[in-house]
Length: 265
Image (cartoon, rainbow, N blue to C red):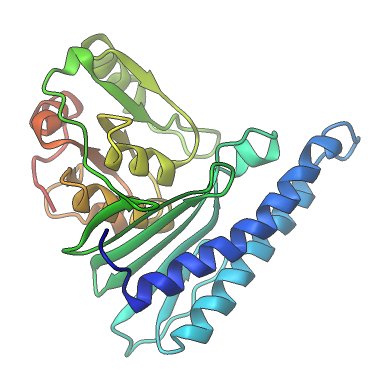
């Protein structure tokens, strides 16, 4: 196993600390489901607390780095490095007591991802990578799947929800679904990408995401030997938010089915 760099040690420790807090809160969600008000405010507070933990831990270790996050962004115009964080990816799953959510931390140098961590506290699965050093799940090296046939492949996606409609989604789904073994929608983009890196999924696509949804996952897929493309040539899928990721064998076929640009970042 490759040794984790100082930056990765910071990232994994921050994710583990936030994960402990979220696990405690997740244990309360089921009890709140029966209340009239429901758990929405509670989950929002859990999300906020987890972001505060991440910010404190990352800033304490690397005060010069910028931070990009959903609720607030710390901009440092002269900084070379930026943390891109999602303290609770899969909020709807968390809200409904579904044990499929994660903490995502990406590290960008300029517009390039150089490290990523996706931590799933329920299973204690820490996906991590660094540019040029490979991708890992806990202590085990990750590689994308070797499947060459779409007919045998399991592909993940995200279904647009209210306020985030995508006119192209049904067309894309109708193009892909008949060609593959199955489509999955699990509700946490960072984990979808981590699962592609681990070979659990053979590919994943989604539009209209934010950088914090995909930054760490994109880094994982690339370091696990996969391919990542935008939907429009010359776009950066991390910052544009339209992403297609898969193993190299299937990538061109999926790009053609989905109308994505066959441009590998």
